[in-house]
Image 1 (cartoon, rainbow, N blue to C red):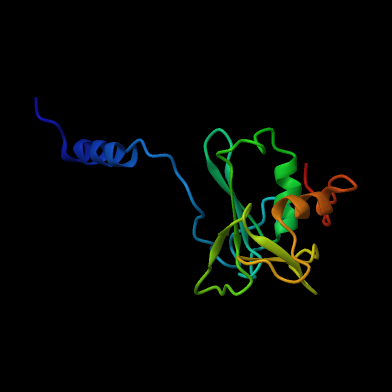
Image 2: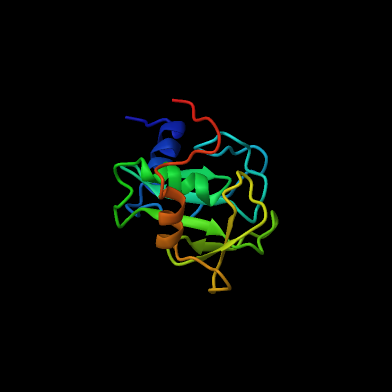
Length: 153
């Protein structure tokens, strides 16, 4: 029995794609095309981009502001799963070179502006008035979720 070449090519692709390794880390941002999972605004400012990888399929969810990510993640049943990854861009990031930080280990400093007005940016080292991720989360959620823009349900 002769097997068609295109069948073998597809089979090879499937085998190499399923190498058994679990996806990890942030994905590339398509500036001004990728939209925030919570507020649906285009992700444009590299200094505040955030990603969450988690859930049953280890999918990546992208955000334009750490505040959007925190509010959205707070509503997910798998938020506390140790495998859930949070990646946030360092304040020195540019579109050409994003420096991704582990969102749980980053320090968040007040900023005059941020894409959705939550007013925090991430950095690797603690600075003046810097908050840990836990403190940032408490600060943002202290009065319950505070979605700045309308959320489509």
